[in-house]
Amino acid sequence: MTKHCTDTTNYKKFRPHGRVEITTVDNKIAVFRALGPFNLELLDALQQIEPVALQAMDIENNSWVEIVVFEQSCLASDELFAEFCLHLTALKASGFSPVASAFVFTDEIDGTLLMLDKYRKCFADAGLVFNDFNNETDAMEWVRSFL
Image 1: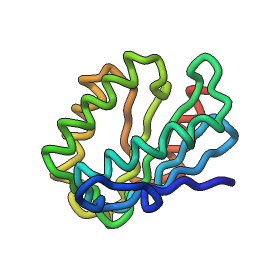
Image 2: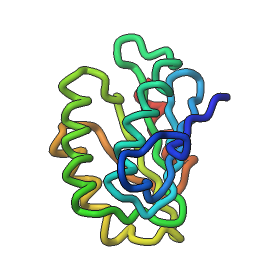
Image 3: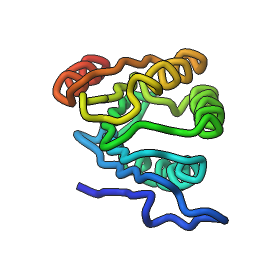
Image 4: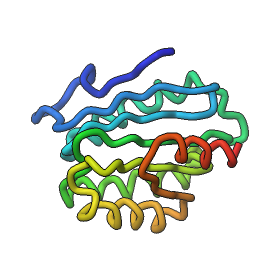
């Protein structure tokens, strides 16, 4: 299993806060392990590794799904959310967006109460299928139902 990580990217001015590792399951499921808190530079780093990670997947007819598992914190700046919403909208317009996205916020994740509605809004505004879970097992079962 190949891992792609934002720690290996080049950054322009400021080092990214947070980390995202991407692995794939069954060539149809992208699993993002996101260690927050996050800043705008992390989104730039993610945009460097995401296309490389997804290229290895069998995503004919746009038939892939994603799970984002938060670790430690899901806090992000308002600046990041503004750009993240644009990123999702661009993915949707390009036809390269996942069929469904599941985000996992366990009870230990810092910032869930403050951030969950912001994540939901970004996906709703982009017209993408989104659901949130408190465990990875349920998230995996849900996204597999879309394949």
